[in-house]
Length: 312
Image (cartoon, rainbow, N blue to C red; front, side, top):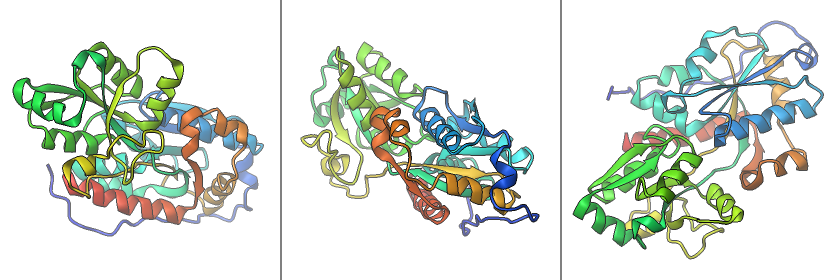
């Protein structure tokens, strides 16, 4: 892993030109880039952002998913494209920071211009299925040492990365299996392909609401117990390490060199309150929707940078 020199996270708004506020950009076609697939959590949040912007009278934005590279794939083409008011990026800042640190790409992340934060923190959980025979965290540790266990997740550089790393460190014998997206992780765990997996707590509630076979939640990774699973201990409780908690959230960015009027127009449209029907369209994910300004994005990025550096 490349050694990253500590440096201040310099992101800001660059005002270029003298375009009247909001008017030049309101009718311009807008492309919304995001990582992973259209059906992923990231894809759903990007679709929500596009719908909110359309509800403000803009032409319906075009969504462009760029899978690969643990969620970092859209960043290089986003930075390389034109700086005009035609593109925005929706990404979770933890993924940006982990890839920035691990791949020596922090300077690229620092070029992104923060516009707005659109969700509060999503938490993750460790799950298992009936076929594994596991009932508790103690079972996981014992089985991992005895025979080894496979752990499904979206990769160490994804938003699930801290949970994957901490589980493997606390239960020697656990091996990661790349299964990008909650649906694939659930499939792997419930089929018995892997014994355990890491998904968002909101996605568990959603799959339970569908009926049929459901996973068992062994632990959650938030700072406090999940309101959806109050009887399930946090990973910090199980390990006795209070530093073992984190969440991840989504923000919207403009390309470097974007006109201040463009950035401000998008920020204004994403300032909330959001239409109830659009929030409801996210299902369980909608519970985390919350508007935040560019300064909150910067603060979140700094926090996520500290999380990334704590285990990479």
